[in-house]
Structures are given as C-alpha cells and as structure tokens.
Image (cartoon, rainbow, N blue to C red; front, side, top):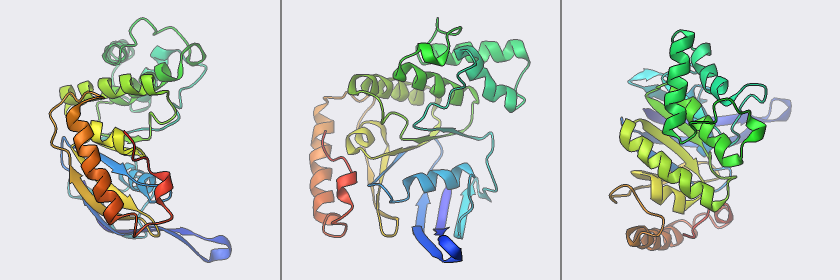
Length: 264
C-alpha cells in the first residue's frame, strides 16, 4: 500500500476552507508488515486509516493498493474500530458470520464453521450462543477481532481497538494479536496514542505530528516475537525512542504532545 503526496482537507462552514488533516504525506506499507501509526490527537492517524479503507478520497495525491488507486471499501481490507460495533440482537456466532454473509462468502454451514474457527482463534469458543450484553468489554473486542479475521482479508486496519480496555485485558489482547499475526502474516495497520503499545506490536512505528498532519519519522522495531510486556529489550527501545522523540519532536510540536503516551 502507498500514500503518495497525500493531502486531506476538511470543508469548513459556509464553503470556507477547513482544517488540513494531512499534508504531503508519503508512506509505503509492505505486504505482511505490522505498522503502528503513533501520534497525538488530530495528527491524521485515523484519516490515513480511512483513506486506506476507502471511506474517503484524498484532496490531493494518490492512495494505492497493489499499485492501483483505492476507489472505495473492499473485501481485501477489513477494519476494526475502537467501538466493537457488534449487533446487540445477534449472537456472538451470528455477529462473526454477518460480514461473511454481506460479502456473499460461503454457504450457511460453511459460514458457521469459519466463524467457529476464528472464535476459537481468539479464545472465544464456547460463547457462540451468547449476546454482546452478556460479555465483558475485552470479550466483545475479541468477537470484533474474530469478525474482522473471518473475512480473510489481506489487510487488517485497526483504529485504537484496545484503548478503552483495562491494562490486563489489553495485555492479553496484545498477546493474542501477536500470535495471530505470526500465524497469518496479514498486513496490519494499527492506530494508537501509546508508544508502549506500538513498540510491543509493530515492525515499524510511524510517528506523526500535527498542524498539519505529517509523517515525522519512521522507526524500525527489530525485536524478536512474541514480545513480553516487561521485556528488557522493550524497556531499552522505549528509553531510546523517548529521548529521540523529546529531543526531535517536542520542540517542533510543543502543544500536541500531551495527547501522546510516552510511558511504558
């Protein structure tokens, strides 16, 4: 995937020019890569995700997938949001099947089997007949993850999916997501405010700044997987990155950094 010279403007009131969310962004994401977009609120992280998903078109520049312009949403790109967006009137099983049904994937019996397989992958086997209101927040997010995975898309786009969860549940989902990525080698683009989360999950961290949104720096995370929360290697890279970010970005972005979590 590639963003080539992408600028994104939002219209203001009365036809006036509105906020520039992204300006002259160039970014390449390679097949099988796990990339985290990190930055304060308003830096355009979610805008990039929406452009790749095909939910909007750039004001300037091109957004490409496999060398072709992205014209709209497609089954090759699954999206998972912060809100689990499960249908409360459907069971866990039917929620996971729903995306397959909308995409005209498989007959009913095969859809059931596929849904069960992915529910088992996220440790939700045995909960197929329950409804979302019967589940904890972490369990709902696991169902949402299973629903996204069941589409078997090449690309998984994740917009702060674990930010509302407690630390213990978030840690567990980090472990599961790492395992799933190692098994499937999907291309994952993951939006987060947390440097800690990005270091734990990503092959590459894309640090963004605001006013307007731009890519400030790209940082490779060359640490073996699976990565443990209290790993010394994670602590070391966090310290190094914190120093670099404070030195290079805080002077440039004095008002934006409170929205970015540096602690580990």
